[in-house]
Amino acid sequence: MSNQGDTSVPLLAARDLAKTHGRTRALSGASAELRAGEILAVTGTSGSGKSTLLHCLAGIVRPDEGTVTYAGERLDELPEKRLSELRRTEFGVVFQFGQLIPELTALDNVALPLLLAGASRTDARATAGEWLERFGVRGQGESRPGELSGGQSQRVALARALVTGPRIVFADEPTGALDSLASEQVMTALVGTARESGTAVLLITHDAQVAAYADREIRLTDGTVATAGVAA
Ligand SMILES: Nc1ncnc2c1ncn2[C@@H]1O[C@H](COP(=O)(O)OP(=O)(O)OP(=O)(O)O)[C@@H](O)[C@H]1O
Image (cartoon, rainbow, N blue to C red):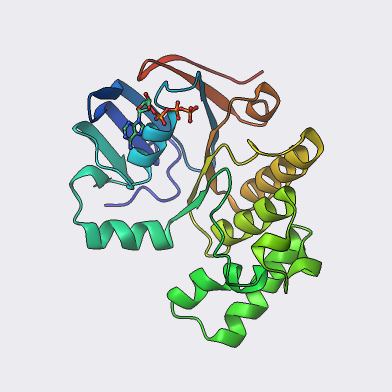
């Protein structure tokens, strides 16, 4: 079953998630929905469970209780092989830092998901170059991650997350290590591309200015979704 194109049904839905790490209860009864093409900000104090929620929604971590449904499939019940296929083909992920492979150039970092999807090296590098261009970092294509500024790294990471045309990008504090100008550039690039391609974005942030880019905001408190509404 697929709900592709049907915006009345959430693309991704979590119901009553619970997750404990050791003795720490990170999520307790958290529910959230993401619609196709929607940009959703997840806010909340440190330790409120934001990253754990993102990991459960992206199929990186299995919840102890509750359900995660993506386009009609129960992610929490899928075998690891199908989950990793979904993560590779339908989801893109961006973290705060440290996600690029240090030994590869920026261009090869962006080309990698295409190579894994079966593209030839020439095609993958050509498409990767177009995505670097789109994010304003074409000139850094031959640089290695250690030679890039924080903002440049995040733009390369976004290009890598979006290059395969995912339906959802999960971004965990993508601007958390950036100054306000770099943060604005990264958010403008992310939101502009997501809107253009109809990609949904689940965005964790501490920053109200970043959350303001979203269509809607949910706030986590002690592992539960406390409020839901439209971002200011
Ligand atoms: N792998 C882990 N092992 C042990 N405890 C963990 C682990 N991951 C998260 N926790 C704990 O679970 C709780 C929720 O963590 P989580 O990272 O989801 O919160 P967060 O809202 O994203 O926090 P932050 O804003 O600081 O990143 C915290 O108390 C955290 O210390």
